[in-house]
Structure formats: C-alpha cells, structure tokens
Image 1 (tube, rainbow, N blue to C red):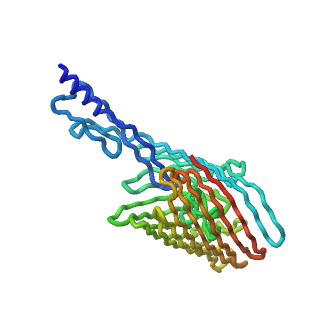
Image 2: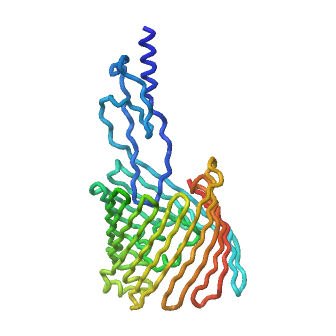
Image 3: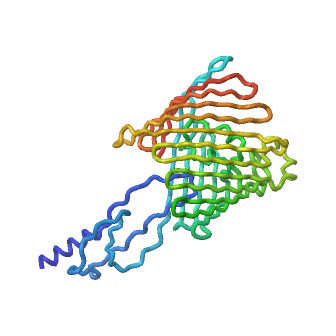
Length: 374
C-alpha cells in the first residue's frame, strides 16, 4: 500500500506544469503571437503507476508525458500591451541666440489582440503633447499559412527607417529622408512571408488611401510594393516603390506639392546583438514637379554589455543625413550615447546634432533624454 501511494505521489508531481515565463514581444511588427494551450488534467483512473514515470519538462514549460493520449485545444487569444513615454531637456544654439527647456517627446500605447493566430486587431494611440490621437488602427486576418491581409490606418511600407518602431530608434530624431516618404494612411495591405534555409523573405502589396479619406502626406491613392530579406547572420536588404494611380483626382487637392507621385527606396544593413548598421537612399517626385527629391542616411550603433545581471548596455551611435530638394539641401550630423537598462525598457540618451536647413542658420542641438516602457 505504501509503495502504491508513493507511486501516485510521484506521478501527480510529474504532471504539474511549470509556470510559463513572459517573453518580450515586438509591438509594431507584423508578426502574431501564438501561445501554448492548457493541458487538460488527467484523472486518477487514467494513471498507471507501474508504467508511468516522472518526465522532464520541455523547453516551453509543457511537461506532459509523451505517451499521454488526449486532444490539445486551440491556442487561446493572445493580448499584447505595450506602453512607453519619452521626455528630456533640449538646448538649441544658433547665430540668432539660444533656446532651451524640457519637453515631453511622446506618450504611446500599443495594443494587439490575436485570436488563435487567425485574425486580430491592432491599435497604436499617441498622447504626444497632451493631444490624444489614433496613429494606427487595423484589423488583420490570416488568409493562408504565411499570408495575411490587413485593413485600416497604418504605415505605408516605404522607408525602412520609418518602419522601425519609435522605441527602437538609435537617435532621438528620425532620418531626414523619412520626410520625403509616404507616412500613414487608410488602406489595405497583403503580406506574404516565407522561411528559407538561410534567410527569411517578406513581400507586401498595399493600396494606400483608396477612399481618399486622408488629407496629409498621401492623399489620393498609391500602390505600394515592398520586399525584404533577412539572413541569419544579421544582414538585411529592403526595397520598396510607391506609384500614383489616381493622379487626376489628386491634382484637384490643395497642397499637392507635398504629395509624392512616385517614391523609390532601398536599404541595406546589419543588425545583431552587438551592431546596428543601416544605409538607405530614397527618391521621391512630387505631383507638382518633374524633378526628383533625394534623401540618404548612414547610421551605426555598437552595443557593449556593462552588467549582464542587470542587463545594462552602453551603445555609442552616429548618423549622417541628407535631404536634397528643389529649395536646397538639408544636412544633419548626429552622435550620441544610449544607456540601455533591462533591455529596451529603460533608455537614457545623450545626443548632439548639428544641422543646416535651406535658408536657415547653422543649428546645434544638445539633447538629454530618458525613455521608459512597460
């Protein structure tokens, strides 16, 4: 009798699942989170003490015996919430004088709900400057393995630098070329992904603002084609093009000098746990002009671990930006140091920028900034 009780005790202990640990999720990627379903508990009648042995837990926290015979339920809904805020102190120096003071850079909330890896919704809300605004709001669904469709307000997939989530930026300010790229609009987008032996591929086809509800950067409607490749080594390639398909309708709008008729973008870079290297060039032609506007950027960052236990990392960064328009050239050089604590949850930045815009004096900018996220 004592032997039977001991066997039952060992069996019950072996069937208890280990607690799952949380993992960081990239909020603004197109990927969807899939979680393991709960295992239905076995009854005493299903246990055979003489043959059942204690099993070792697997990597995903599921220590269910391999010989158990039961149906695994569908993955439950996955909810991902991400909040962060950015604030700092800025000093601007020009030949006309000095300006300085604190600022609240941004306050953001991202929320994603996925149902069994089949369909879901995503929303990105901004509270920058105390003004509430919905930046992104989309619904997405899986059409087939590796194929997804999304509809709503979203980023136009043109500039690689603009597609980088704001919480992952190397410097406080985005590259100048992003001002030439289409930004956000209401549209529909189909994304296909495929994993190869040594690299992953992704292609996107988007129709931005087909209902002409936007009044800012895009207007009208644009067909966007984009693709990228990512190798296991960290190398990546990015290419995209946007083409106007309702030029007559857009020509009736005000401010068409800021609406780009055609855009071409290409980026190459390297990103691993120690290095981030990024070079990008963009060509854009406005509806109101036949000349091409040009933009280019080169940026680099190197992460050096200072304290492994507390996830403390030092990251020197630099960048050179150029935007060439009809009204003149806009040039900016940047250098800074990022201090990461606990991964990307707490980021402290000290940065220096020197910039010359068309018909403007040379400007020096010093920024001390902190960014915290949950």
